[in-house]
Length: 103
Picture 1 (cartoon, rainbow, N blue to C red):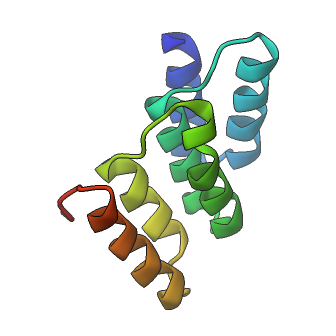
Picture 2: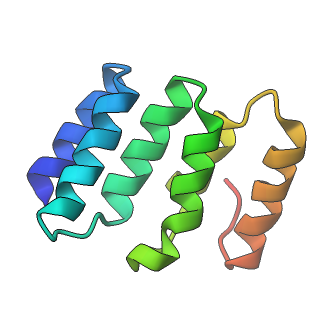
């Protein structure tokens, strides 16, 4: 899992959101559940590419994957929604709903 997480993080830094998404699929195909780290990195990769819809989709799927969103996850999702102020406000409010302190 550490190797997948590192690879997904590299995809984010290299602006290769589609490869990050492919790696998440490979993890699932190999019966390895993505964790908070892999999902946050994939959300960040999508955010860098202004793929806010994919970022929000991943955020929404996290509970089904038994992964709890954290401050990093919500921050990445909010960055993905830049220009979509209504979505950003909704995410900001969701941070409080899960008892996280906004940073």
